[in-house]
Length: 197
Image 1 (cartoon, rainbow, N blue to C red):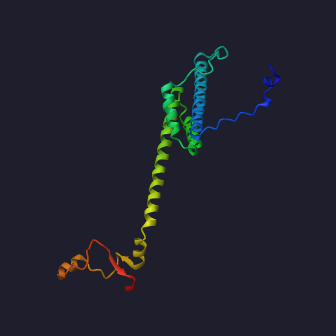
Image 2 (tube, rainbow, N blue to C red):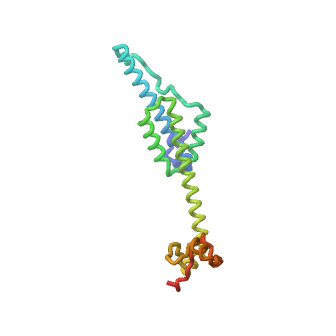
Image 3 (cartoon, rainbow, N blue to C red):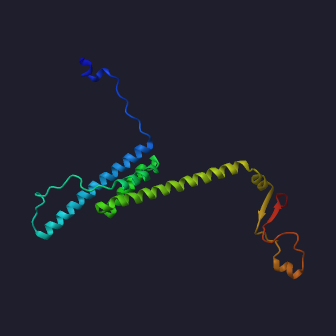
C-alpha cells in the first residue's frame, strides 16, 4: 500500500457539481420550508409550555424533552411542492421567500398549516410569472406588428381627424332640411387633409 493512497493531495481536486438554476431554486425554497416548519414547531411548543404554566402555576418545562423534529410533510405533498418550486424563476426566489416569511409572521400558523401557506405563496408567484410572460409576449407581438405596418404612420401624416369640429352638420339639421346624407357616414369622425387648415 502506497503513501499516496493515504494522502489525497496528489489527486486533482474534484469539481463541485454545477447545479442548474431550477434545482437551486427548488433546493433553496424547500430548505426555507423545512426551516419554517421547525420554527413553527418550536413556537407551538413554547405556546403549549406557557399555557401549562398559566394553567398549573408550575413550570415543568425543564423536565420535558422534545424530539428535534417531529412533524414532517408527506412524500406526496413534498413532490407537489417541489413541482410548484420548479415553476418559480430564479429571480423570484428571493421575493417568494420574503413573502412567505411575511405571511408566517402575520398569521403565526400552526405546524400543519405552514406547508399550505407555502403552497399558496408558490401559486401566487407562479401566476404572477405567467401573467408577466403573457404581457411580454403581447408586447413582443405588438412591437413586431407595429414595425412591419408603416401605413398607419403615413396615414397620420396626410390626414387629421377632427371629431369635434364646429361646422359639422348634425343629423337633425339634415333631416329637417332634407339634405343628402351620402357624403359622409355619421358614426365616423370627419377626416380632412392638412391643406384645409
